[in-house]
Length: 341
Image (tube, rainbow, N blue to C red; front, side):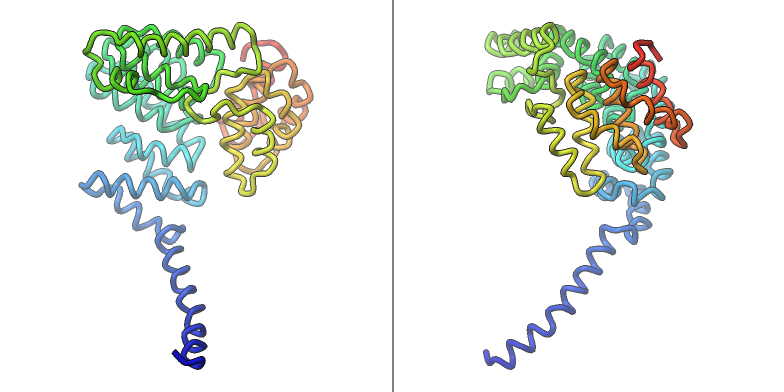
């Protein structure tokens, strides 16, 4: 190929890159929202899940899709639509949780199973459902109990209610529920073949090796709570025993604002030890993203009395435009002042 031909091809390259960028924006950016919304009514489940997944990845940029996602999630008890809504609209997700909570007492076991999974899909925004999910751990159906464990682990807050409940689930009569509860406590102890066998064949007699691992999980979790040591009870395979200092580093160095959601959620799960991160968390209380303000309030509440320096920043949040933020800020003030919201 001659030099002239090479230069000719290079000249065309920027145009091709530009076309590729336009295609990418059309397929994944706000321009794709109408097409993705239309796909929510597809008879093919895989197509619906792809659409909800892409909408969820857009985050708040897909705010216009929130009402449709909430409608689909409520109509079909669709956990994938709920997951996307939880990534997009804090108050929409909270309202959806409030509306489906009564279904946890439905006579249909299938409805209860779907409802528990939906609430787990909403993530931290479904904190309002924690008391009902704690009751679901006593459901007569083992799959409802197992999904309730997963949902509580994903919501993760308030830690003081969820951690003891997950420890209690380690004594569930069904091995699949015990296994799910065990994996909620992450001490970087990967599941071995015996545990996997216990999960896939719950009707088999108790496997001594599996039961021994579950007992070890329970012992270490209870000891961490008694000692309140740096060996924190981390929930749902997210932190992998990350210390507070590392989460603080992630929080400070995050580029896009959405990247701060994960470390804030994890700090809220850690509890009083998160006090090391308090100055950085207080700075987030004034952020324009309501989800960040909400999670920052939850971190302050988890820290408790040692977070008094956050009180001035919490005061205006009692009048926040977001109902979820207002409620969380009220609870945080009560926790810092040693009262119950």
